Amino acid sequence: MTYNPTRFVTGRIVRNEGRGEIFYRIEATIPEPLRFVPGQFAMVSGWPGNDPLLPRPLAVFRSGGTRGKGKIEFVYKVVGRGTALLSGLHPGETLSITLPLGRGFDLEQAGRTYWLVGGGVGFSSVFPAAALLGRRRNGFEMFLGARTRDHLPPKEWTPGGKAPGRTHFCTEDGTAGYHGRVTDAVLERMRELSPEAASRLTILACGPKEMLKEISTETLKRGIPAQVALENHMACGFGVCWGCVVTLWEGDRTAYRRVCRDGPVFDAREVVW
Ligand SMILES: Cc1cc2nc3c(=O)[nH]c(=O)nc-3n(C[C@H](O)[C@H](O)[C@H](O)COP(=O)(O)OP(=O)(O)OC[C@H]3O[C@@H](n4cnc5c(N)ncnc54)[C@H](O)[C@@H]3O)c2cc1C
Ligand code: FES
Image (tube, rainbow, N blue to C red):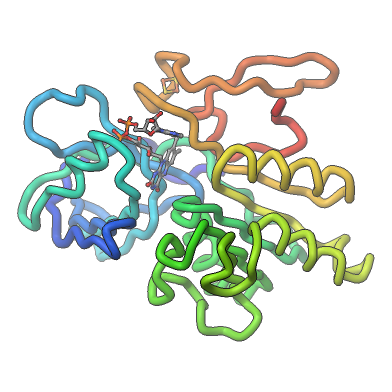
């Protein structure tokens, strides 16, 4: 699913706030509001000079505004040089952004209930899906997993987070919510479903590769459709360098496909794990 043609814009940072030094949320004004599909991403840079040379891919977290005055938000975790430099930018400084990129989640299937699964910073791709489903009053549940409570997204960022039974927080050390891996919480909840409810379920997931692989294996076994957002390393972000390829099943053969162009969201059945 895509909407708008890709374009390059210069954003002006309005805020760039850290949360527990784990996650940052950066907001910038852009010339026009962006219509994006949850799961689509942008290539973002803004640090002075050319080191690192390449911008970094970040999921579009939120966009809004009015004609002639748009805004865009990303959330990110500092893992290396690019994201560390991003975290040092201040309000008033500029961001270079190419967006929207890739194909997002398919949320257009009638009569489906969606479960959204975010592992680690993977919540950045599934929150926009939750926000859209919430606006449409479409049924969904969200499962968010992290090693420990400090690595969970802040509750105030969670769309519909206060609705009872809507969001399942999971921690591996048991410091908040369900004690265990997010995939185990999903599987337990799946076992509670009637065959009729299971037949209406679609799962959307973003997170570490092992988590996505497990979700894919389990949903495939049960005949439940699943879409996974992959976060491969990227160089160009728009299909030129072939630096982001993933192997997919096409019938009984396999083929290389570019995550930035053909994804980052793929039907879980297609991915060769
Ligand atoms: C489509 C897409 C959407 C993304 N959305 C977000 C988002 O919304 N928020 C967010 O925080 N991150 C997101 N990421 C991941 C983010 O792009 C990387 O964390 C970032 O590029 C790292 O840049 P860096 O310079 O800080 O780290 P680097 O110096 O490039 O790397 C630091 C360390 O992290 C590892 N690493 C870097 N990139 C990845 C990756 N993609 N997968 C696994 N390990 C990696 C490296 O191997 C290295 O060990 C997304 C990635 C993709 C492809
Ligand atoms: S990152 Fe260059 S083709 Fe995907």
